[in-house]
Amino acid sequence: MGLRGDRVWVWAVRVWWAALPFTAGPVLADGLYETSAAWRSTASVGLWVLWAGVLVGSLLVHPVTLVLVRLAGLSAVAALMWAGLGGADWGEVALIAAITGAVAAVCLSAPVGQVFVNGISYGDEVRLLLRPPTVLLAGPLPAAAVITVGGLVSGPLLLATERWVLGGVVTAAGGAVAVLGGRSLYSLTRRWLVFVPAGVVLHDHLAVEDPVLLRRRVVTAIGPAQQGSGAFDLTQGAAGLILELAANQPITLTPPTRRKSRADQVEVGAILVAPSRPGEAVATARQRQLA
Image 1: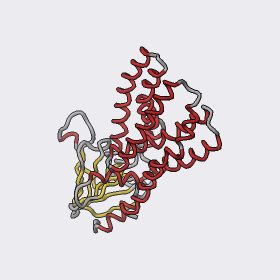
Image 2: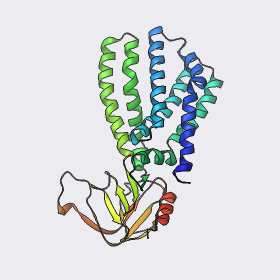
Image 3: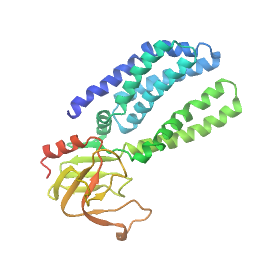
Image 4: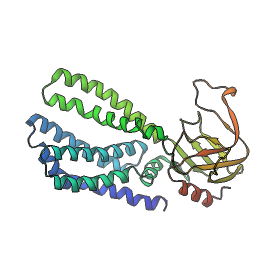
C-alpha cells in the first residue's frame, strides 16, 4: 500500500478525534453531571486540553506524537466506559465507545505507526517499526500505558476534591511516574528496520548496542525465516512472521552491555528480525533491488 495509502488511516483517526466533542462530548457531560462542581470543572478542562493537544499532535507525525495518539485513543474508550457507570445512557456509550475503540485499534496498527515514525526519516529512506517482545505485551506494556495516563490525571482530580495533601503528593509522584512510563513507551517507537540508499539498517537498542548497517553489496537474502534457521536471533521474542537477513560476509554485532569492547562483539552470517509489516519489508527490499 505504501505511505500514501497508510495516510488514509491516519486521516481517519484525525477526523474521528476532531469530531469527538460532538459525539462523545454529550456522553461525557452526562457522566460528569452528578459529580461536584470542582471535580466536573477540572475534568472538563482536562478533557478539552487533551482533545486540543492530541488533535494538534496527530497533525505532527513523529514518534512522540505516535505515543500521544495511541494513549489518547485508549484513554477515550476508558473515559466513555466511566461515563456509562456515572449515569450516561448505556446505549449511547456502547455505540460511541465501539467506534472510538475501533479508531483506537487503528491507532495501534502498523500502517499508522509507520506513518508517524517516518515523520523523522531523512531523504530516501523508509522506516518500519519492529514488533515489541511478547513478554512486554503480556503485562509491562499495558501497565506502562496505565501508569502514564493515571499519573497525569490522578493528582489534579484529587486536588479538585479538596484533598490537598494527598492530591499534592499524587500530583508530584504521578508526574514522575508518567514521565518514566512515557519514556518507556517512546523507546519502543525508536526500534526500526530502516531501508536506506546504502542498504538496510537495524536500529534496535534492545538487541544491539549500535545500529547495524548491512550494505547493499553484502545482502544476499531478505525473506521469511525457515524453521530451525541458524541465523542470530534479534527479535527479542516477538511473535508473528520473522524475517531472515543473510549476508555474504560476517555481520558484526555488539549486544547491549554496560561496557563496550571487542570481546562483546559477535560475528554472524545472518540475523532474524521482526518488523511490524514483514510483507512491506520484503516488498521494499525487492523494490530497492536488495538481494
